[in-house]
Image 1 (cartoon, helix red, strand yellow):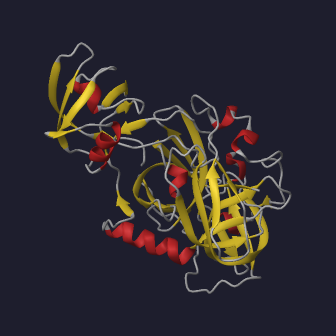
Image 2: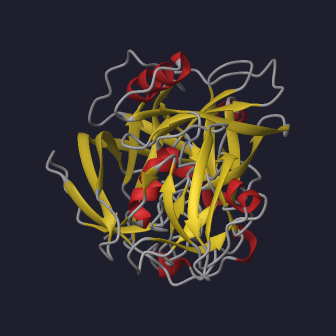
Length: 381
């Protein structure tokens, strides 16, 4: 059985360390391998890494099986079109990844009339631009990430210039029970149009799923306290609503199995998601909650050599304005020696958008340079 986080997202297997973000280019919105159990024991999964050299747009994506979705996983499921009532408060989220190398699609839920949106972190991870469509009206907005908690797979967005929106109706006080009837609603397959609705029942509670790179290049992460359902949650549904039989949201669609005839879905309990959203809105970071985006230097670093060797420079970035070029080695940041790609990535991750930093480096000819630059805003960490 295969486990996936169902944001519809091709991905890349090329390992990069990007100063400003750190990425092993794992398919966070892609696929994983898992064995599942209806007990509370932890489920182990490994994220598959396909062999794309870049992330093709959704419209040209053809090779779902390579992501472990399983033959037929993206074909018509048991889902039907959602009702108008189920579409109220839902949004479709489309992200541009890494400055145009690809796109991803998922779902979100409106929390406030002025455009606060709840979704999964993996729906927006790696995004350099985010577009949001209100399903019930067709209105579209640009969006910014207010903050996120990657360990719980929760993110909050803010729509630009939104007002008068109708939020979803949540029921954070309801105690979900095994056997309860539920319906998962979202942007199945990431193709827009009418939202899909997949009915099912609650199979188990307090489930844990561990996701890690099968190549061993990334750290494992665990999602806990999940609701397990037998509804057909599929790619594109991530961040969507799990409704109870009263039409109130009790969970946020987050992950699903595939590769078998019977799909098992997982959702973050809405009470947990809303508690994290409240903390994000308060502006108070924690050990897991990050507010806003990290600063971004804009260099791709080779992980195959000792030192912080520049393998690429992002156009219009702080690094580009400083004059860094491919083949340069960054030697220090704000006076602190940088001895590896990981050290530089970690140092930049502690800085904010707009921070001024002094970068020292030697170019390919051995000449030394130093410039002070302002960090920009890069892909969502």
